[in-house]
Length: 175
Figure 1 (cartoon, rainbow, N blue to C red):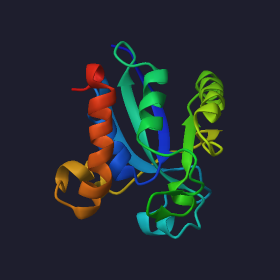
Figure 2 (cartoon, rainbow, N blue to C red):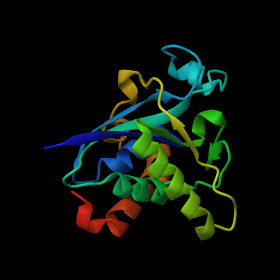
Figure 3 (cartoon, one colour):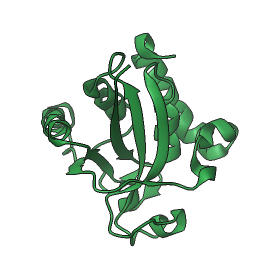
Figure 4 (cartoon, one colour):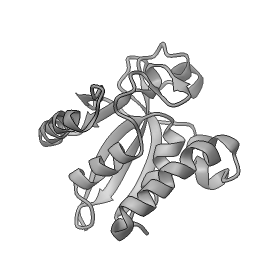
């Protein structure tokens, strides 16, 4: 098995994590922070909006089952890339739409993919494509949050619809 990594932010990491965990070929999903200027930030610091970091997930996926294009298709299905510095009720730069590339090929592919998306939306796609410098793993209680808290009101209202979209639109790739 050959694996690759992708690091993506599109709102609350609990919801993005839960959606990707529905897919065959996803080996791990880790919630964390990236794209900012503060070393080893805490959740509270990131939520302040002053660290420059976004809430992100880092995926490790089996490239024999999923390609980077599949990952991006799912990512853009489970969040709105036209919302600047927000996703639904979550407002701030920490909730921005961002792809943090692990190498030149990923960056170039993601930039082209985002460029093609513009024609599919009435509003401009605001997704940033930047190089990943450092990924900081979020605190343990944020890992697998949806699985640990399936009745959490935030999760049932925001994560459940994303999970359903993945199950419906990517049924052939769902677990």
